Amino acid sequence: MSKELVGALVQLGAERGIDRESVLQAAEEAYAVALNRRHSSVDIHVRLDPETGSMRVFRARRVVEEVLVPGAEWTLAEAQVEHPETAVGALIETEEMNGDMGRIVAAQARQTLQARLVQIQRDQVMRSFAEREGEILTGVVMRVDRRNLVLDVGRAEAYLPSTELSPLDTFRIGENVKALLLEVRTTVRGPEILLTRSHKNFVKKLFELEVPEIGTGLVEISSIAREPGHRSKVIVTAHQVGLDPVGTVVGQRGARVQAVVEELGGEKVDIIAFADDPAEMIGRALSPAPVISVVVDEAAKAAVVTVPEHALSLAIGREGQNARLAARLTGYRIDIASDGSGTPPVAEPTDGEAVAVEGEA
Image (cartoon, rainbow, N blue to C red; front, side, top):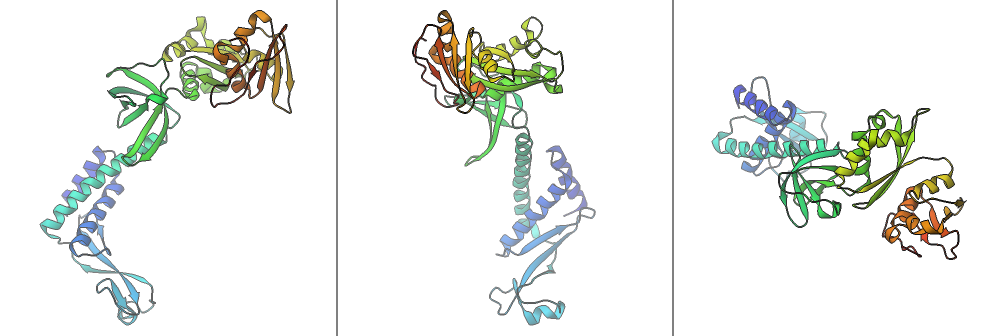
């Protein structure tokens, strides 16, 4: 290999975002693979001098009591001629081949090297995305099928499965889409970038983009409960005296929260101020329903909430949604009764299937 060829390889690597050391290591591995294939061996390795382009070829020999693989093994007596301190079991490196490989070996090495550089580039891209898990990416829809949206996110393709879409989401080819990077995973087809728009953290990250005070730590999103396409409830708290966390997140004339709602396709979003008292927090979580009283059992993580009879349906929500979200948001089992009711409806703080809520809906 010439000095000019080494320079060309390094330049090629730079164009693909691959550092010099990785390119040279890949070249050494590619030529070693070609030589091992030619000599039906596995013990040949190569060292490349990046300054001169010269290549040195080595074999690693194991010291054994009886040679079974000539060329790959030495007897102890043979090894001690050059390495007096050696012992049985040692691996000794010897330089006994020159770097003149011939055109066939060189061609095989170049082919292996090209494939290796492609793999290195793919691995680097995937590592860079893996470091961004939990961030919002913006991609362009390239393909649409029954199971996935395939998005171009710059240096790679990403998958947005239909199961990770909100019921309100509809996208066409060529549209820009924001989504949360959920996971970079390994499959039988290779690494995949998996996105989501249904995860509750997608809502959190959207607010972080719209509300600078969240990024600076003045306001914190303490908890989120979400049923994608329907409603999200968000608890916010302020870390600066006198700062209104709800007003900060909602924005002037509701501009900040409206930007999030528009990105979510019209999904309703309730912003709720944090309260240290569990009873007060549960009452706020049931917003927009008015609450008469909340009796909390701390040991059982349960609460009984009394609401005006005319507001019972509002407190429970359609198909129990409001009560269910309040239970997930606070972590309490919530029993809801009207001031003139007998049997209380129940909402459990689960993130699983929808909880059945007795009473009016």
